[in-house]
Length: 269
Figure (cartoon, rainbow, N blue to C red):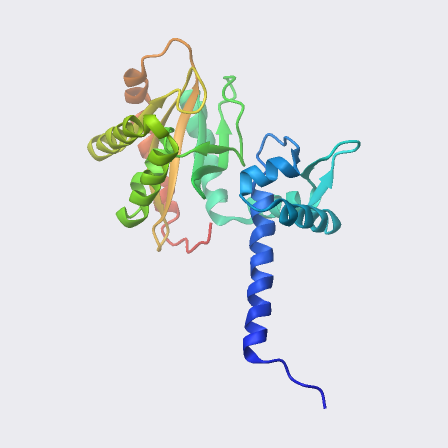
């Protein structure tokens, strides 16, 4: 008679499998939208996982078609298995389908790029992106990852979070900034004051030099899922406050229309 596995052993096996999946996803999330190949050493740096773990995971992800090794190099890049999942998400997500035409209209009206972003760990991930047909602008797009603490869209998202979730993130950004931590926190709080007073915040050079963003939060669906929407572009001769005043009314109107369109949305994003 075969012995049956103990309940505790089954739980341990399930926990180990879950940890492996989580670590594999962490490796995939380390790749950015610029499609730059990454070595095992860079994956160790970005994920914090041990070198031996990264080596096992990259080998497994290659076998299942989610990564490929760059020919003649010791670097890896996203393969078609990962891309197909991303395209399926973009093609079927109800929230993105509602957002895209509104975002394109706003981009064309203001001659800017328009982005929707959500949290990705400590960063802000673009899940939708539209650009005016009349302007050359930031070289960003869906899948771009921006720092949350220094960008307008990141700060708008932070402000939309419950305080219990927001404050630990701010503390983490402050710690990462080292000697500049106090100044960063003051700048974040100033953006919160702007959001409280006007519904928008604006940041110049928060991600790239000579670029700006004006952003506002959205709470999507019955569960009031926080999202942030921003308008921006590159401009070397810029009056940031004048640009915010130009953009804010249309940005807030579009955000309100999207929030209304998503009134019955139940997620997930």
